[in-house]
Length: 265
Image (cartoon, rainbow, N blue to C red):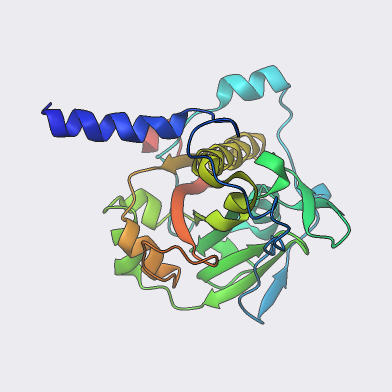
């Protein structure tokens, strides 16, 4: 490891730390300057599909201890001709709004924690094999528990490029892609925002893992994705950018029916 690499790593490691307002170089947040907070919900299309209520989803009869023990990454998921249902998608969306609060109704308690209730993560789904939904690219609407169709003809080569050639992920019944809208977090936390956004992404994915186990399905988180291809697939503007509406992909996960042990050889 050369000295330049060591220096670069040293700078990057600072993201892991916590900071207080007494630290040198600390900026006033937009919140402290009474700048109006950004919207915490995005809507991008008119064609929408209402997802079934969580209560309609059949669950496996696990104890919580068993659930934690069973949780694991499962790249061996069935792809083509092995559909999952819309009730499954309903449950694994993992970040629905439970309660909207605040004077301007711009804060929401969801089924996943977030620093300061900022919820800077958006959920997208590449649907390949879900009974009741046409294949395509969808965006999850946490306020109304709906999916909005963004593109009914996903470029399969581009999807494969997104997951760096991992066919199990590209062909899984559902490929989750999570994006960050950094300014939602920066509005309050400025320099600390990057760390909190990444922590929030981890909360979301763990919800996905536990939910999949409860449904008898498999999930495999993917950190090794192609940034440019992912942002292109989601029709996001390339960065870097300091704009308040900037959005970029930060995480992915493939989800589907687990293969039997004999199929995993």
